[in-house]
Amino acid sequence: MTQTIAEIKNPALSIRDLSIAYDKNYAVKNVTVDIKKNTVTAIMGPSGCGKSTLLRALNRMHELYENITTEGKVLLHEENIYDMSTIKLRRQMGMVFQRPNPFPTMSIFDNVIAGYKLNGNSLKKKEKDEIVERSLRDVALWDEVKDSLHKKGTFLSGGQQQRLCIARALAFGPEIILMDEPTSALDPIATSKVEDLLVKLKEHYTIILVTHNMSQAARISDYSLFMYLGELVEYGKTKNMFTNPKDPRTEQYLTGKFG
Ligand SMILES: Nc1ncnc2c1ncn2[C@@H]1O[C@H](COP(=O)(O)OP(=O)(O)OP(=O)(O)O)[C@@H](O)[C@H]1O
Image (cartoon, rainbow, N blue to C red):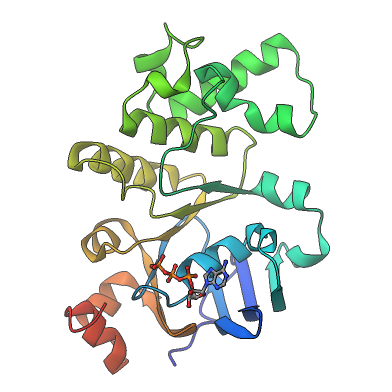
C-alpha cells in the first residue's frame, strides 16, 4: 500500500488502524490515513467497499446500526473521537447526505439553525439572524432565498435544498464536512453549482467526500483514497493517482474494468 501517513503535516484528521464490522463481517479493515487540512479528499471504490461506513464512522453515525464493532482510533486535535461526546464531535464534523433532506416541517430559516435547536442551545434573535445569513451566504443561497426565509425548505429546487443542507452543516462552524455522494440526486447544473461551492468552501473547511463519480473526483478533489473490499488500497494526490496509479486494482477501477 502507498504511504498514507507522515507525508501530511498537521493533518485535519488522523485515522489509525480503523476497523469496523457489522456483526462479525468487516466492512472497513485497518485503515490508517491522515487527511490534509483545507482540501477536498475523495473516497472512491466499487459498491460495497466500505466508503459510506468509513465516512459515517468519522462522526460516529455508524453507531446507529446494531451489532457494530469499532476498533482503532480517529484523532481530531489529538483527541480520539471515540472518547468524545457525540455532540462535541458533530459540532466539528458536519454531515451532508446523498438526498437533500431539509426538515420538511421547518422553514428555510429554522432548517439552517436546526442543529442548535436539537441540541437545546438557545440563541438570541440577533445571533440566529447572523448565523442564518452567514451560512446561506457561504453556500451562495442567500440572494436566492432572503425574501422567503420563512417558507418551507422543501419548496426549493433539489439543488437549492442540497445547498440548504450544506448551510445547515456549516451553521455550527465545523472544521470538517463529511459528504456522502452529495450530488448523486442532482441534475448536471445543480451538480456543477455544488462542485463549485465545495472548491470555495475548502478555503475554510476540510471536505471529505464519498463519490462514485470518478470525473467528479478528478475535477474537485485534491487527494483521493481508493478502497477495495474494506481496505485502503491507495491514497495520494488525485492528479498522481489518476495519471499514475500505484496499485493494479486502482488502475483497473479508474479505467472502468470493475466498479
Ligand atoms: N447496516 C448494515 N448492516 C450490515 N451490513 C452492512 C450495513 N451497512 C453496510 N453493510 C455492509 O458493509 C459493506 C460496506 O458497505 P458500505 O455501504 O459502507 O459500502 P459503500 O462502498 O459505501 O457501498 P455503495 O457504494 O454501494 O454505497 C457491504 O458489504 C455492506 O453490505
